[in-house]
Image 1 (cartoon, helix red, strand yellow):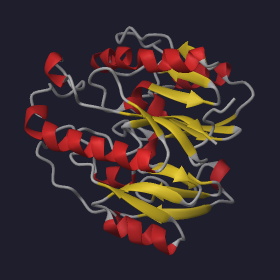
Image 2 (cartoon, one colour):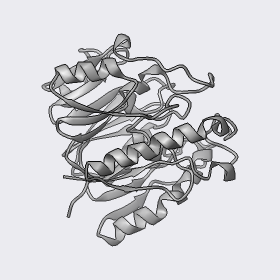
Image 3 (tube, one colour):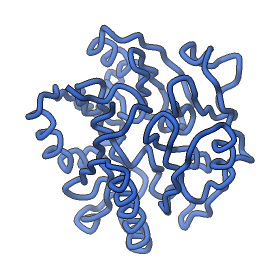
Length: 293
């Protein structure tokens, strides 16, 4: 059975997030109500729809949530043939999970296993916490980040669910939400790494023999946000999605990054996704790959 066990094998099926139905929700995230979405909805949703068209033109089957769920990868991760719903850090974002149930049920009906992390109480030091976007899939290996949205109990819970995986960990600063603006594997043997957060001395062991593309501030073009407080930093620009081992989707604004990747032999497909800082999610965040290979 086809499944999804790494970040770069040929992409077959994926979920792309949506803002549709935001009017029915009071909160977009722990930090923001949905009020700001009124001003950006048309352009943001248009970008998502164009992304869907680009994916479909590359023979990728696309699913959409049944209601507002932009950062789909926060909610879950697919490891081999197992769908894992996250034990998410923020209670207000737990309401996004029901929008994905129909899709997960369909994949379960096809033979996937479907499990859920323990639901946090959000007021206990013993809560198991992990967002799906803190898990980097590397075939037989997993790299898990601990940070604002994942703790050591989440790490241990995942380790027990996947005893056949070799697991390594990276500890990021508490104000960093997810791993995919720090470490982005784009092909087997090639990884982008945020040079502001990782250096040659603390590169995770899995990448010691990989080709590392160091991403510096000057490689990323900073988008000017329409809101300022509690939004993603400029390095959301390195939040990319691989179509296959030598082609990846990159935000169309990141022309310097695309040039750097082109010189490394990668094909880049520009995607017109806007307001990624305000929505705290780029092309990897707002998607969840279901089938690769």
